[in-house]
Image (cartoon, rainbow, N blue to C red; front, side, top):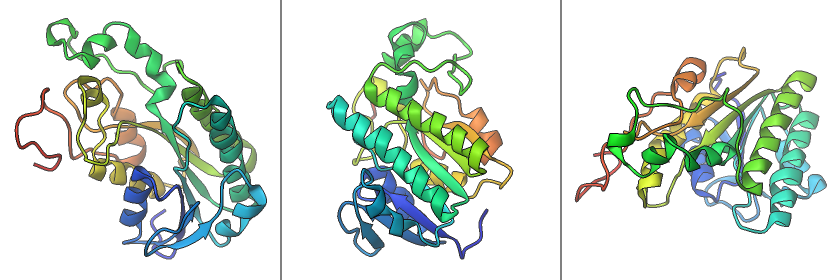
Length: 261
């Protein structure tokens, strides 16, 4: 699915990942943003995803939706309003408009509770002597274990995606995204394990957008190739061809470290 005439709609393009993915894709495709405020240099439909009627016009003529709009704060009611109700609105508007693929920005928060137990706790704390060899990994087949309403809301999005794929024939690929920071570097040992660099974030989204039409539903992890990584990358390689370019090789980071250096 790499036809350059496609129109890609990015929700939440003013966010870090939405912005990285949208500006990368704009080099190949026509990109439109669905955002609560205008995005510089990008055609933008300004609307809130919690209002279905308001967002419908953004989907006209769209082939693929990259849904990155989300509420990240502590208010559980907002989690339900934005990340559950809003996500349903995005999927519904996509279905009505005849969209062929949705790339859903899920989260590693869907399995975050595993990190409270060994051996994953040792990996987040960089206790190298306590980490088994070969390194254990969580895959998309492991039972979800969210520890917040945010993680549970992202699981709703994944389940909704499977439903829309099976009931309406829309290809849905869910990315359980790692930790992306504006400064493109992890801020803690735990973040070093789940770090996702800017260029890897853009790549994993592009790979989902351009995945074969035969991929009707799947879940992949989006992380860089970090030395204490415990989220699986092999499935993403097989399904969408994702090959991370970056990764954290040691912690603490050496002086002068950069993601691309």
